[in-house]
Image (cartoon, rainbow, N blue to C red; front, side):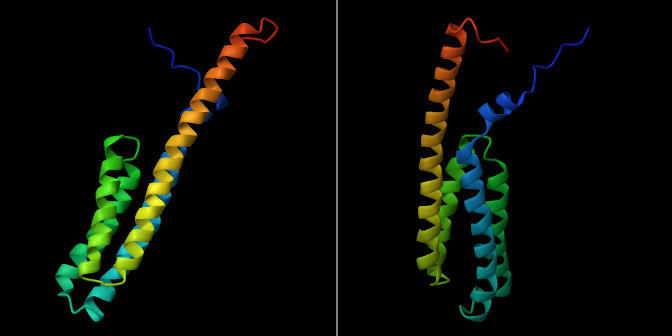
Length: 142
């Protein structure tokens, strides 16, 4: 006796796609590259100890990639916001991050807010589609 898994139709997959997750993960991935590249800048121009620079630069880059992979959970977006604060704060060590940090924070905010708006509008559109399909007797079910 095995339970049958629900059908995984293209419509079901489309309903579960998250534009917010996709856009925020893209921002974090690009930010990871930028933060990783701050490591040699901290060492050569900032005079930061190599171990500290590697820990901070590569640590933040790795954190961005990890959080990008965890965005299925709602709480991971809070970590994404924290990473934006850390990126701006990195300006204390690497002055170029005073410019790049706010840019990535703005990209993150735009991806997050626009993604949430798209998700709300898609949910409303699918609800309306389902309502119309249920009320139309000529439309085949399924």
